[in-house]
Image (cartoon, rainbow, N blue to C red; front, side, top):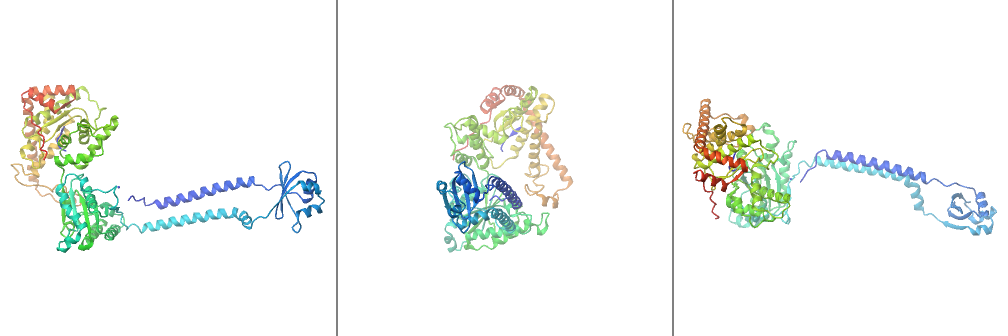
Length: 635
């Protein structure tokens, strides 16, 4: 196998119903608990035995009463043995007078402690009413909570049209990002500095009659830092940053998306100067008239409202609309015309210098060993985006933490590169002796063809240790950054891709499934040579088929082939010719260097991994001059 280059959270809609049910359950549970407590207390609070005044007098004369508590007409009698009984006195007379009338002994009455208490009206009524009032209060509370929840549910039905944009204020230092935190993309930052200047000092532009772009479209591959750059513009300008995804405008109800657009722009105008950032705008900004929903499709209604709001901007409103997409080719032309998104900023994949700076930014808060050379890491990561490099540093930190060490060294970063490119090492995926031999010849077939052919990229590493889905891999890296690729380079790379296939044919006179991915990738390259790059002498300088990235559902269903069946047959013939010629070249190289193929494969079977230095020595031993993996200039 050849490897060369490489979120305001809204609750669910049925939340009010769930919350309402939850309140019902809670209220019933509370009622059951209170009922149980009330029953238990009433069992314990049974009325004491009531005796008559004549019995009370007898007990006093017998010396059995220690205390009498008078509460209005009620008497609480405490006996010497600790028991308590109740009685009642005459309403019109004093207790001592009543007892004297009943013949109580004055001496015995003197031994009894008399306590007179006048109960307050509040405590009297509270004690009488509370047992009935408590259940009533609980029922009223339950109905109040239910009514409140239903009101919240009904209001939520009217909140669909409100914007769900997240707002980052200029005072939020924790979330603040400036251009210092964004490495590379020098041209993009220079382009956006004008936007920052306008937001800080719009009068300078308006006085001279300049019209600041209303919309800025950030275009680039995934992971190149479009969202990060938009946040950096807001941080530099120190203005509110309204961040929303294009998919958040669209709902199942027609008109909701357009209402959210209106609300978003209304909020931004109130907070002006401000930045509105719509991420993945292609979710609502695709070509109109090619979808399945007709002219009344909700997505198209939302797009129409965005167009209207952009047209409604006045130069002094000081609101900039920024949007990001990695599919600019599918956007509606009305969205891109002057007066709307009339400034477009392209973010390319970082070159080696930019990659070095990006790695240094992501390494700031990590303990880095003294032996780490960020330049070497940058050179070994061609085609990596900023997000890939961030993931690379994170994987290295995780690896170090797993091993219980405190610093990230160079080897950790090298291993992490391979993990990001190919996947984790599969130590449990052990090859049999025969499979290991086949995989070793396959990978050395790739590596040897790449080393002999002049326009192929130099080999950095060969391994038969399984990573991801690959049983083995050959890592090749370009000697220098490329922006243009020649036909000779493609033809040599085609031969390299089929080097493993050719080695299996030569050595084992058989073919395995290990070459399936190589064939798939090589066929794609061969087809691009014929239909995209005009590199077929027979077909000529003609491009066929739709431009890459445009074939989405609506256009695919309504589009037509732009070439005839006869031309299709010629295209297939040319693709087959390119593939067969590449296979013949690979076979020729391997048969000519059969001794080197056998010797290097034996070393790979023994060691499982061969790095570039050792591989170059083995090539020199067999008369093959290795290619120089030149370091890039540090400018």
